[in-house]
Image (cartoon, rainbow over all chains, first blue to last red; front, side):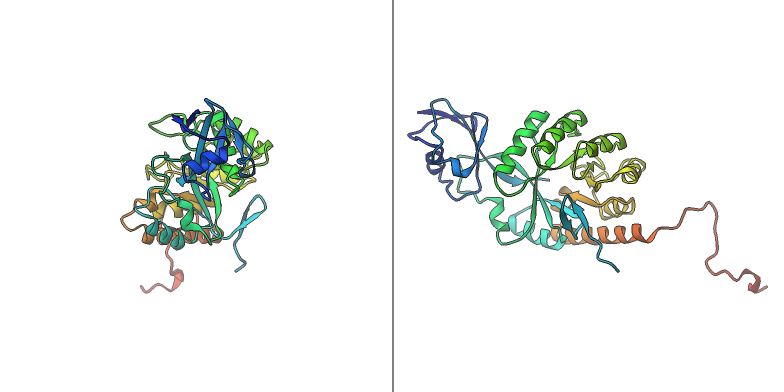
Length: 65
Length: 259
């Protein structure tokens, strides 16, 4: 299905947020997920189902002051 | 001498140096500089992951096993709503419930928007964050942020990354006199003399990134800044002399002068 991830349209064969994380090889990394404006904890990823056109943000800590 | 500790909320700190993690030439130099700084608090930004290069190492992997306190910022936000969104994402990392509210009103100066900063602070305090707002060097705004529940106030010395030092030491002095929460000079410092001046003015701490990361030798500069902070702090506690218009001899015994 088509998702908007970090501002880019992506056609992915996924069912849950956990699948999205796995698709990008981000398991075990310090990633934070927001889906349609709601922050999802790690515990929610496996049960949080994605739907077409969902706006997903995958963010992390970077250097900054 | 009694151990000179201070607190953000209930968290006790010995170091008065908050160090930023941007702009270092490489992770090795960054880690060595952090160690040399003696800092206990590290700042970060929150950004989208580059999905084209997710194998790139995370800045956090170099910090594993170390016990630093993380202070993520809301840089990139230009409104209170954007800052609140970034703060919630930062907290969802599970790494920290501290947040530096940083809301820029102008891309050229990156000066903080005090109205939006106040709004964001009010919301985040209600949500249980430990809020450290970056704000203008304005005594009234600092008081307003304190009343809104900020755990510390962080007035800028000068615009971010300029290294211009403390442009209004008079205001910083007033802020320190009036504040009931720690005052941390955030942004604009450039040299050891700047941080020493900040500490002599009585602030509780300083937050720096660029003057360390972009120094020719970041590790050496981190240590120099640490010493400058310690010197300035000790000088503040020890009480400097007042300034006089004319000379006064240091030897005394005027009646025994050779004639």
